Amino acid sequence: MPWPAFGLNWAVRWLSHAIGLLIVTPMVLTWAQRRHINWSLRRLLEASVLLLVVLLISLVVFNPRSDPNSGLLLLLYTIFPLLTWVAVRFGPRETVSISLVSSLVAAMGTARGVGPFARPDLGEGILLLWAYVSSTAMIALFLSASIQERRQFVAAFQRTLNQSGPPQAAVPLPESAAPVLPLLNLTPRLTLVAVGSLIAMFIYVLTTNLLWPQLTIWLSGAITVVFSTVVACIGSYVVLRRQQTLYEHIFENVIERKRLEADQRRSKIRTQELERVTDRLQREINERQKAENALRHSEQKYRAIVENQIDLVCRFQPDFTLTFVNQAYCNYFAKMPEELIGHSFLTIIPQSRHAEVIQSITTLIESPRILLYEHQVLLPDDELVWQQWINVPMFDSEGHVIEFQAVGRDITELKTLEAHIKQSNIRLEQAIQEKTTEMERLMERLIRQEKLAAVGQISANIAHELRNPLAAVKQAGYYLNQLYLRGQLDANNPKVVEHLRLIESEIDDTEQVIQDLLEAT
Picture 1 (cartoon, rainbow, N blue to C red):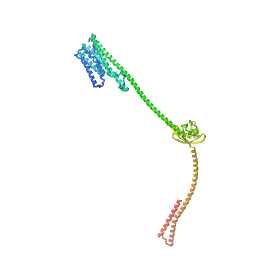
Picture 2: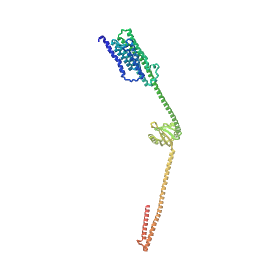
Picture 3: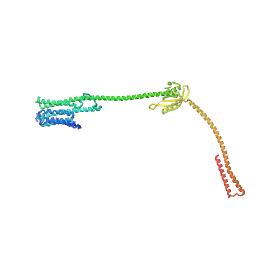
Picture 4: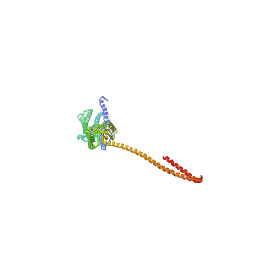
C-alpha cells in the first residue's frame, strides 16, 4: 500500500468498525432487554407502515436504475422525520431498528456501487456512507434516548403523584403546562429539528455541487456530519430541554401543592382531633359540673340532715383530730365549732379511758369495719357521762383509711337504769334464793310426810297381803287338826296332800311379799 493512500485506507477501516458500533451495538442492547410488546392493532399497523415507508425510500434511493445525480440524496434524508416520528411514538428499540434497516440498505447499495454514495474510489463512497449512517444513527440514538428519559421522568412524576395523593387526573395543573403534557405535543418541535437537518443537507448539496465543487470527499463528509449532527442534536436538545424545564417546574409546583395538601390534611386531621378532644373535654367538664352540682346538692341535703340530727355527728382523722362536728355535738359540749374542729377529741375523754379508745381506733384502722363501742366523756362542768358511738371508716382511692365518721348519743340514763336493774336483779336473786331455800325445806318436809303416808299405805297393803295367805294357812291347819283328832290323818289321803300343798304355796307367797317390802324400803 503506497504511503499517500495510508490515511484514506486507515480511515476507511476505522469508519467501517465505527459504523458497526453505531448500528449493531444499540440494536443488540435494546433488543436484549426483553421488554414485553403489548401493541394494539392500530399501533402495530402504524409501525408496519413506518417500516415499509423507510424500506421503500431506501430501496428507491439505492436502486441500480436510479441516477445518482438526480437529487436522490435529498429523498434519502426524508428518513430523518420518520426517525423522529418513530422515536416519539415508540422508543429506542424501534428507532434503532429503523435506523439499522436504512443503514443496511445504504451500505448494501454503496457496496454494489449504486446510490448517491457510489464513487469510483470505494474509500470515498465509504466516507460518504459513514457521514449518512453516523448522522441517522446519532440523531436516532439522541432522540430516542432523550424521549425515553423524558418518558421515565413522566413515569416517575406520575408515581410520585400516585404515592403522594390522588391520581394525576384529579390534579389541576397550571394552564401553561397543560398543552405540553401529552407526549405527542413534542412531534411538531422535533419535526422542525428533522426539517432543520434536511436544510443542513441542502446546504451540504449546495456547498459541494454549486459553490465549491472542488472540495474533497473528506471536507464534504465533514460538512455533512457537522451540519446534520450539530443541527439535529442542538435543536433536539433545545426542544427537550425546554420540555424538561417545564416539567421540572410542573413537578415542583405539584410537589409543593401536594405538600400543601398534605399539610392541609394533617391540619384537618389535627383540627378534627382537637375538635374531638375539645368535645370530649367539654363533655367531661359538663359531667364534672353536673357531678359537682349533684355533690353540692347532696352535701347540702347531708348537712341539712346532719345539722338537724339530734344525735351527735362528727368526723375525725386517724390521729383523733376532729374535722367536722354538727350543731348537736357543739350544743352537747357547750362549745363553738371552731373550738372543736382541729383539736383531738381525746381531751373530752377521761385519762383512764384513753388506752381503750386508742386501741379500738387502731384495731379499726388495721381491720376496717363498722365499730360500735361505749365510753365515758367529761363535760365542761366535770360531769362524767356515758356515750355510745358508731364509727364508720372512710377510704381514699387506694383503699387506705383517711377519716372516720361517727354518730353518737348519750346513754347515761340507760347506764343508770342498767345499774338499777342490776341491783334489782341482785336483790331479786337474793329473795329468790331465800324462797328457794324455804321451798326446799318445805319440800323435804312434804317428802317425808309423803314417805310416811306411803309407808302406811304399804303397811296396810302388806297386812292385807299377809292376812290372806295366813288365813288360808290357818284354815288348812284347822282342817288337818280335825282330821288328826278324828284319826283320819293319812299321808295317802288326797285331801291331806292338797292342804299341805296349799300351806306350802301360801308360805312362798308370804316370803315373796316380805322380800318386795325389803327391796322397796
